Image (cartoon, rainbow, N blue to C red):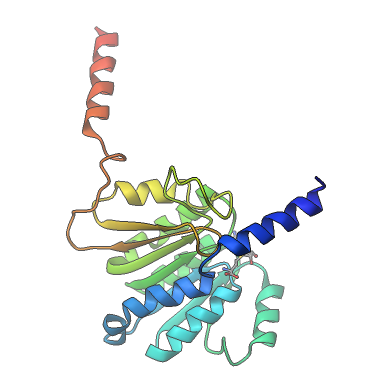
Length: 222
Ligand SMILES: C[S@@+](CC[C@H](N)C(=O)[O-])C[C@H]1O[C@@H](n2cnc3c(N)ncnc32)[C@H](O)[C@@H]1O
């Protein structure tokens, strides 16, 4: 099968399997939190602008949230502004590498309520993006990652690279409740920070594993 045909078949198969677009899931998650978000000066941040920016802005406008979109492609951001002037009016575009842009946002805002990570197709880059913003995330904050999956899930819509480090990190944390949406966007994972430390997945935080390793280490030294 030629590469072109393979891509066309894959697109067709994905569109049949995809139940929610990126924007649908963004709106669904934010709508679940809308009452709490209305009570504060909410801040939404995304890395990687595009169609998602429209959904983020739509909800942001309803509740007067500050919306940031970080992308190093200024041409894409300009095209988006030209094509959808009303839908994305008020978005703060941060042009440049997302790691630098996020650091600036983290300096400006003590709290971020919604963080959508969808820039470089790299597990490490996505993880670094998260680490920069981690101090701004509080109970109730949500993180959404595209090209991500709960480990072990077979049927996904993309190679799920962006979440390869971040998703296990969130699963191991007792404060993050994590849920996979393999049929949304290009396979997505969402997480919400809780105030109770009840959410660690024991598969990712097994004290036995560490003990065994220590015992073996000691044996080899003696
Ligand atoms: C998959 S697209 C984003 C799609 C968008 N979220 C949507 O739903 O339509 C990835 C975007 O990330 C941007 N990007 C890639 N690496 C980046 C980086 N290191 N810093 C900032 N933007 C980056 C690209 O220019 C591209 O616009």
